[in-house]
Image (cartoon, rainbow, N blue to C red; front, side):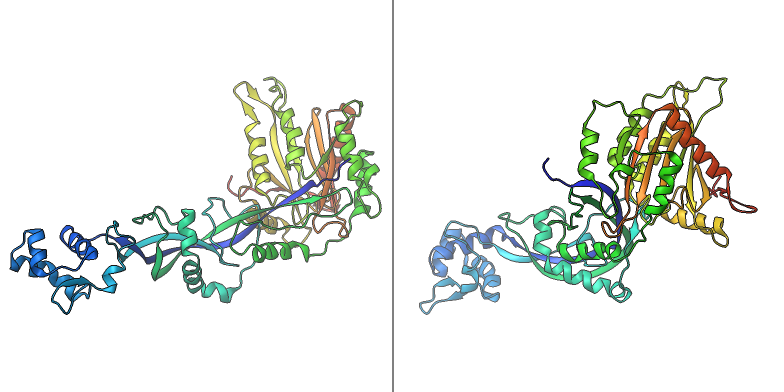
Length: 465
């Protein structure tokens, strides 16, 4: 089997950026008024006397003096020793060839809105996403205080590249050549913007993580790649395989355990099993968090086929118990999955389920208040969200469960010798016995307590209802 990379996690990084209003002038070739244009063209072909010029244009002496006054004052036309008028070197530079119109470069004033990130001052697109579901990178406050000067410098340095890419709108020149920057007149900071960069984590069959880099997307590719990698790769996770083993034992699950070794994961075996559709296993293997591409495809396929609950029957609960890790939910894919779950709750034919999301909170003083603040900052919208202390198996296990219908389980493995982020692996099942077993474990956790008078379930985190 050919070696290839397998995506197992994704994290969005938010690069603080600022939108600037930049006033500038650029040089663009412009033509001359009709009379001056033909006067210069005529003298470009050959020097002529004032009499010859007057005859050619049909001017009297006063009209000719008016016509040549400005070109002479601007040192574009001068007299030869024999009294004939001729073009100076300056005026000759207006012509590119014998038949061309005379053109002169003149400053044109313009204003553009440009956004630069505050880490490397790359020009970035104006995204409409917010500050939630992403890890915000730190910015050097000294650099930020001088951001207008940095923006001025980067704009001047890359002006022609911005024009060529169409980033400054439609700037026309006479011969469609690139204009040159004449001056940057003013730079005004307008507002701070969240620029989002997605980092996918991939691993090969030899358990080697694919290096992260941004290829030719930004002017300073290496610097911004380094800033993103540094935020994650320098943090050392603790190994949680013992906790994961407790979860396997509790779930009586052998779906993933077979592929986990002391210091490696048998991805080759996992992919081979996922490709084999001939077996009768009561589950399908999953790689990634449950909102990740491959797991979410399995879950959504089932949701699309749900039949509404009968009017007299109790509406079933669809529970999503989150993982208590730094990287869980820090992706736009999480928001999309949550929005899909909310959308599938009801159809024109009736109710499918009632969504309840259980977000892990650290067991600490004023746990609920701190959880509301932290999850509000992470996710923004906390509708349908309940707080639970620590999380399922210390937050190492993520579950989406629709009672008596299906269950999806993801074990967020922390193996720091393999990966700087968690490696979520799990399974999807519609097997009634497996679903019931998982349901029993989840229900027991939600109804349990970490200590006397300290229940795991701490209540709604949605302060807007």
